[in-house]
Length: 156
Image 1: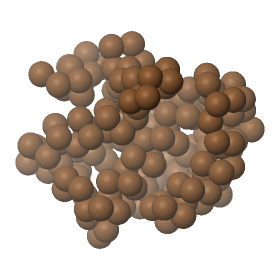
Image 2: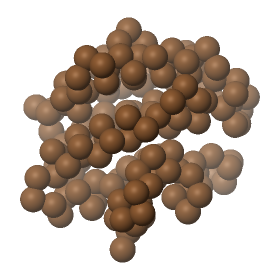
Image 3: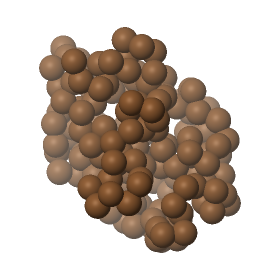
Image 4: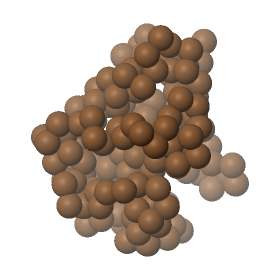
């Protein structure tokens, strides 16, 4: 059983997406950060075997989003997971295509929550563990938007 299936069975979707506890996957250069893309690709591998993988992704992402609060790690995890989705989608990895857009599936209220958390992250990035060793959040957000995400997450 993979990490995502275990998280699903244990009702720990938020912990999985944020890389908490047993769902923490170290970044490959051992800098102490959680590697969101490893968990996200594990999620994709699980979902790819389901009958309606894209609909399942939307369902689990909504469940994850609904569990988040204004907290540095929640906001950081959300930003990274959105980035993972768009990075995989731009390459048409797994079942993801350019014709489907996760954020388009969300309600106005869910998009608003993304905006609130991304603005919170921008204003509180210094509270994210290890942030002093990372690119400034403005640069990360700019790179993410230019790279694959068609939205300015700060404007929701």
